[in-house]
Each structure stands twice: as C-alpha cells, then as structure tokens.
Length: 410
Image (cartoon, rainbow, N blue to C red; front, side):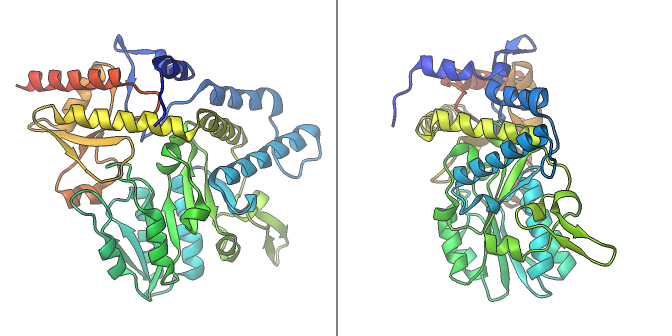
C-alpha cells in the first residue's frame, strides 16, 4: 500500500471547489458519493471550454467548428474505449448514463433475442434501474424474471445462480458493485458461469468505474454500463460497452438523427455501430467533461485511489462499530467504500436530517433497492459513501454527529 501524506490529500481536495463551502454554517462533509461524486475544476473547465470555443453539432457538418467538435467527440470515444479496454471504439455507445444504457440493452436485446418462455436473471442486490427494464422486457415478451438471492453477508449466492441458469436463460444482469451495501461482486466468475451455458452477461457498472480499474476483456462481460457523474464527471452522460457481435445484431433503440443511414418513404436503413444507437444530438459538452474526468482519474492513479478508499472504509467501519446501537448492514468480504447502517430506535430520516444540519451529507432511504430492503427485512438505512477526497477527520465528525443524534433522542 502506498504512503499518502496529508499535504497530498489537501492538494486533491483543493481540486474540488464545492468542498470549500459551508452548509448551515458548518464545513461541508460530503458522504453521498454513491449518489453522485463531486467534480474537479478540470471537469467544470472542460465543459465551459466547449461552449466558449467549440460549440457546434457533431457529424456531417463541413464547417470548421463542426469538424473540430466531431474530432474531439470521437477522440473521447477512443479514450473511453482505452479506459475500459474495449476491443475498439465502435463498441462504445454514448448514453445519458447507466440507466439509459440498461434500458437500451433491455429493449434492443429483448426485441431481438427474447421469446416467450425465456428467462432473464437478476440479483437481489440490484438497483431498480437494473431490475425494472428487464422486468418490463419480460412482461412485453412473456418471458420470466428469475432472481438470485443474497447471502446474510450481502453477497450474491453463486450456488443459487448456478441452479437458476438453464437452457431458457437469455441474460444474466448484475451490478459490479452494490450501491447500497458496497459489495464488490465476483463479476469474472459470474461471467464464466453464464458463458459455460452460452448465456450473455450485462454488468451495471454505475459504481464500478469510480472505485477501480475496469478491463472488460478480462471480465469477459458482453455489456458494461456506466455513468460519468459517479466517476467525478458531469451528469447526463455515460455509456455502454457492448461486444461488437451483440451490437450489430440488436435492433436500434431510438430513431432519428445520426443513427440514420438513408431515409425514403418506402424504407429506412440504419447507420453502423455505435451510431446506430445514438439517436439525436449528443451531449457533446458533457462528453468533454467525461474525458476530463478520465484524465483526472488517470492522473491520480488507481493505486492512490485504492489506498485512500481502503483506508477510509476500514476506518469508518471500525469507528461505526464503536458506537453503541449502530448496526452495519452488509459485511461482504470485498467491499467498496460504502457503508450502510442503522441506529437502534432512531429512524434513518430523522438521523439524516440532524446530520444535515451539522453539515454532514449522507443518504437515507432504500437507495433505489427496495427488493433488497425487503429481503433484509428493513425499510432503509443511512448510507455513508466515501471518495478519495474524504478524510479520517470527516469520519470522526460523522461519529460525533451520530452521538449527538443519539443524545437528542435519549
């Protein structure tokens, strides 16, 4: 593990302007990174620079600004492909985020390959965005949604998954990292299990790309979805990695704009991948912001990020375990820097509201994982999700805040 000085931590924090502001007269302590990460100035500047100097619609324009914007736009596609180790840039589709990427595949793959009586497998760990699109696809095609359970530690039950995969299974869709419990799923193992039965695998990587390097070749997955705003980039942009063979075989999801090849009133033909799945005017400015986010993460390096997040996770877990009445929900062997917990006798909304007035931002509720909450037998939790710019001192302030919450309700 690398050694990181306090000066290095403070230098990184200075890259994020919002971290210097006050909330209710208190310094902001931001522990809601699983919902969205804060943005470094480099990302904010990249978006502004596009609108200040390069704004033009991309593709097909012959004038300078359009040509320049198109070249920059496609450069980012190549940067994303390199970042996740895709086979080629044509396997990267820009979307509004992971949710749209999931909807794209659930609809386009479902329309092309899903038949009555087929089955799709999801897990109890999934975000609603990786449940509902598959559920609706099954309803539309008269297929069946199968659910693999979760162990008491908060890990996908791989033995159950093995039993569920059958000759009727057409897709296994699981998250890389649970946004609620922080569980890091054994994605490569899941892919191997599914591929042994010739079943493709979709990975919801919304939490994956912010916590560690992703190599889709090594994972072996058929699809991988991500959102820029979870990885220090802007909101409203993300993408989908899909193996070329699947993307070429699937029907287009939305129609119009760059996804068109030729239109007549008798017949319309569609563009090649990835443009076949990019209808309408793309969010070019935020694609530039995504590029800046990738550059920033590469500049920091995954060793730095892993060292910071592992330290924060272990420290937060230890400190929370020292608070009487606090129960951590989810104790997987491999976790990202996300901790969900409850305080005995105190509703999570009440606790979260009090913490907010102390300047501490945590997430409260079901975290868009209501089926997981039902499985655990609770309605929701407090969730502290940490990023490399957080500090041990901020965790200490959180613990002091929890003790104040307990004192108020005592």
